[in-house]
Length: 351
Image 1 (cartoon, rainbow, N blue to C red):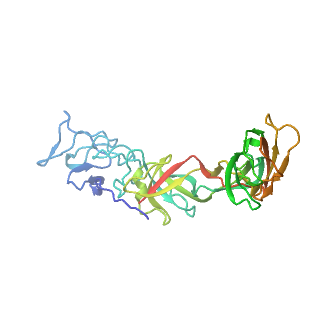
Image 2: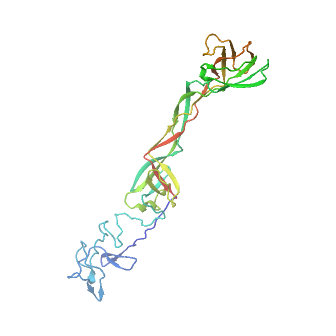
Image 3: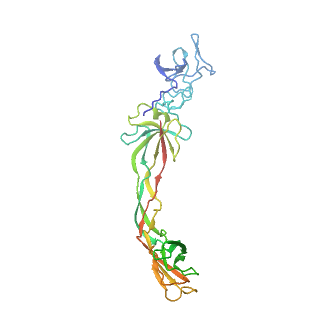
């Protein structure tokens, strides 16, 4: 999209008068052109043939005055020097400066000619700023994981059934006690079945690898003199008249198409969400008649795998230990979130 502004200041017409150029504004006022003499001796306007010159004494560098006694230059007229101020106070830098633009720059923003590529060079009188525009934040992948803590099979409660050779009656629950001895009068049974609790997850680590976002090489051109030259129709075809401000900004309502740009773009990764799991636990119950703390040899031992086992005439289970190891251990490296790192960030907003 290309914006063009037409100057709305005074349009000056150069007219040859008695060998000396004169400038006549669209407001009908006369302005002396080339060299010119001084005004009246007391600084008052001259009168010639019944006409009074509307201008004050000139400060021009020319010699004499025009035929008919027309006055010299207005103070500050820049027709010869290419500098100064014109009759409307518009600063003239020596180049044609547009004074109106369909896109106004709010406070803090700068009018620029933006190109979403680098196909064209900036016009003369513009400063070129090369940038990149990243697409997204990049990505992160988590590699092989290392288990730092095995899944735990000795937490939670053991479930049981009992009585008869089929262990058909619901029993109680028993503590795993992290593998330590459990003491207490826990009842008796001819047959009993214990089932190990599900394994608790372990811990693992994994190192993430970052993939930088894809980026488009772009540039914008900043006018070196008149800001509104960014609106001229002479801009190359690939350019659009846009706004620029450093930092990550919200676009104004007049230019809502946002380009987040910078010098370089890369991705940084967070911690991988690594987990270590097991499919089941292989547990062993050791039953003791000792009431003081699982001393001596177990009276009976059986697997806590849900099978129904005879307790060999145990009258009272005075104490027990439960030990278990995890089966089917694996780790999953999980995911890591990518964050965009943009150096020299800036915002270009286009209509």
